[in-house]
Each structure stands twice: as structure tokens, then as C-alpha cells.
Length: 419
Image (tube, rainbow, N blue to C red; front, side):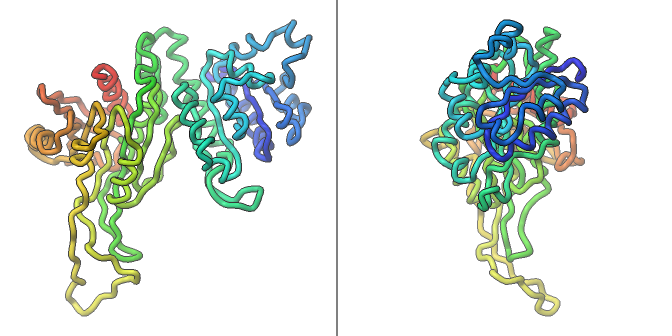
């Protein structure tokens, strides 16, 4: 139950620290309790008195408090929580977390905790994009830390780009997801979750079975421009691919999600790369290698306009405008013959008839290891459920129609067993 959940909120320095007050209010409103740890730099932006009044709990600021250590101790403080939230997580704090530095109360708690940790970065766009910060994010993800992607927008410094703290409501959604999925471990039932519904995926002895693996996922459609207002695309919503990326991240993998133009939130712990065209997706896939596992869910347009117009093409009488098409790159087949071919390469096939026969033929043509065949004759593309067949060299598994998050959990579990 939400009312039994305890959140430990670590507040780093930065102008975004003021949003911690609203986050505390939302946590309390949800029925959870919250304790705050305020870093020295965080105290330059928000006061302990404000946080104490909002949380209705003492605010901890130093490792050297004799009273705190006698009554609770930093180890107990770090372990009594159901979730540790670092918000805002500055570039400095992320670097310390990645390096295992423990030079104040906040970093000591983070090194001592055996609880799930959610880091919510906020910093200048140049700091976020710096290779050192990106290396730290990758290390933290590999270590099992859930890292929310920052938002895009205007910065307090006057610049524009990625680095804004997500809105408190968005952060609260992740808190609900992570605390809901942690219930399974307390119940000694299955452990692991999918951010689309918070249901468990793995048994206790299989917790984070893909830890140390890099999983590459493509999702959504591609858009192939004809002119500034028209394009060639398909009906893919990206929901199945995003669910698979989320399930893989919750299984402990480092996940790179290459997404076509869709309106879906990035799953926690997933590194997302947005593209529009098939050529851009192919480039992003190759740049993301090496990967241990690739799940190519994206519905890539087979064709693109041979030339695109810089201006809107106008009607000329009753005859349609001529449109010459050229074939897009076959990303799946190209990956199968790549020097850095993933150990397990999985393709998707959208079919409306003769599902097993067509998918089996595609398995041979593409030289991949598995094909997940979607029966898209109904409302699968854009819908909440999916009907799939898993085609391997050993034969076909036919799964009943399931919610897409459940398909993702089952597929990731099968991947973990195979790897």
C-alpha cells in the first residue's frame, strides 16, 4: 500500500532545488512519508526549515550529527526507505555517485543503501551533454540506478536544451512505479517491473538477470518526408518497443532506445535517442553498438521519396503529383552481418495472414535469431494489447493476446533465459 511507503529524498544544489518543495507535497499527498537529506550546496537554494515543515520530519544535513548518529545512524537512515530519490541530481553529485565517493551525508547514504535509487538530473545543457556526465550516467545505469532523462527547455542561465528538472508530477509517476514494483520483493513473489503498469516480471533469484548486458531496442515508426507537410509512415505507436525497453532496464540491462516520432515518456533507466527517418535510425543503431542483445521493434518504412521538396507540392490539375520512391536500408539484415553483430538479434514482423509461414521466411532472409510476429489484422498498431508468435530455428511459440507490458515481460524473461 502507498501509505506504508517511505521515501528518502536527497536534495542536491542547483536552482532546481526549489521544486523539491512541490515534490514533497505530492509525496505526502499520496500517503507516503518522506525524510529529507539536504546537501551543503542544496541549502543555498532551499532551507531546512522549509523542508521540515513540508515533510513533517527532521531534515538531515550532516554526517557529523552526534544526535542523529545516536538515535538513528546514517546506515539505518539509508535502509529504512523503500526508495531513495536524488532530486535534483547535479553533475557533481552524479559524478560522486558513479565514482563511489562518500564524503558527506548524502553520498555516504547512497553508498550504504541497499534500496532502489532514482536519480533525477538537473544541470546546464553543456554539462549534461559533456562526455564525462554521459559516462557517469552509463555507469550509474549499469550499477542499477534508475536515471530519469532531463527535460528540454529554457535554462536559468539563459541557454536552451536538455537539462531541466522534470516536473514534480512526472517524478511522482516514477516514484509510484518504483515503489509499486518493489512490493514484490517484500512479498517474496516475483520481482521486477514494467513502467507502463508496475507489474512484476522476475522471481527473486532472477532479479536483474540482464545486469551487465547492453540491450538495444528500436521502437515506433519512421517518417520519410515528401515535402514540409507530407511524409510516408505507418500506424506504429511505439508502445510495444517502449515496454520492452522498460522491462529490459528493470531486468538490470543498460538499455539504448532508438525511437521514431512518438509521444511516449522515456522509461526510467533508459537512454533514449530520437530519430525521424530510416537512414537516421540505421546510423543511430550502428553508433549504439556494441550491444549484447538487439530487439528491433520499430516499424521502419520500406520506401522513401527519392527527392524531397523544400516547398509544399501544389496540385496541378486532376493528375496526382509524380512520386518516385527509393528503398530504405534494411536495418535488421544489415545488423545481422555487422562486425559487431549482437549475440542475440531479434526482429519484429507485422503480419495480417499466414503469420508463422511469413515470419519463418523472414527469419531466414534477415539472418536473425528470433522473429516476433505481430498479428496486426485488428487494432494492435496503436492499441494496448498484442498477439504475437515467437519464431526461432526450433519452431514457433504462439502466445495468447496479452497487454503489451505483459508481452514485454515475457519476452525479456525469455531473453534472460537464452542469454
